[in-house]
Picture 1 (cartoon, rainbow over the protein chains, first blue to last red):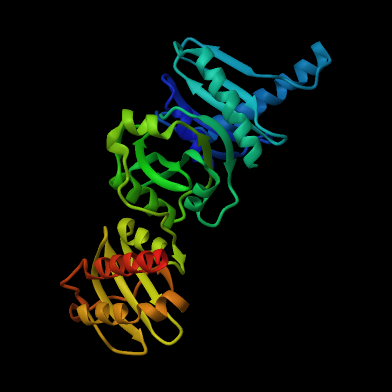
Picture 2 (cartoon, each protein chain N blue to C red; picture 1 turned 90 degrees about the vertical axis):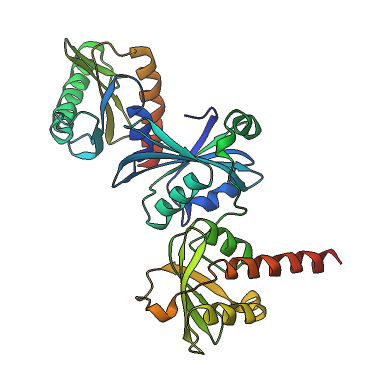
Length: 117
Length: 219
């Protein structure tokens, strides 16, 4: 169902994997261009990271919404945004990806996912 | 990737290509997973008609265009691989000028089932597989491969096979235009007697019928 979203994001230079994940950690749909990435595993961990970030936001900023969660490591980045009430959209990238471009695409496609769920 | 302004994404449809009617000038963007990988297809639309087509392999960085691409899109539609259709507004003339290979010469929007001659002719141009044609009292099965009818037989009302079955269909066009319908599907196995030698006879015959109707309407 989300092939359109996955295909558009996978074509962005430096993007290695995409996952549409329910907030309780189940992979709804995903694909990676790199076979070493286990998208299902990533989905479960991303939901945890997103949930924890939301709690931090509530505790520190007294704000119950977050725009984006970004995890940066020397080997790559994981960017996650909310996609509707019950899901998040996650993009896994190379370390030197054009982050501005990825942000534009992930936001645009998160809206599509939200309208499709 | 083609330029354009995103309008909407639609998941509730019976036939994705019928959404062409919702686009005045732009394209339908679809994606699907096939045996060979993830693909993005674009069907360029002008005044509700599909005029151009492009299919890209997402991870291979390769593409095909024109009639060949449209056949692949229709095949994905027929196999129900499309979960969502994105609608875009775009300068279609500009895209066609910049990428002349994307022109689709087939006319009309093919449909997996229908009652009108135009959509049946469009189907013949893009489809590979079985089609059942029926009017009130007679029915036939044909096997099509990229616009050519390779096999045919009557399954109700007569027992014609091969070229004779095609001639039988053409003789019945009067009834078919009134009460006929067609549906794509998996045919029963065809036998050597069902082989059609004049593989473009049905298309040519129906094109003539279409022209005749145009002339009659003109008067």
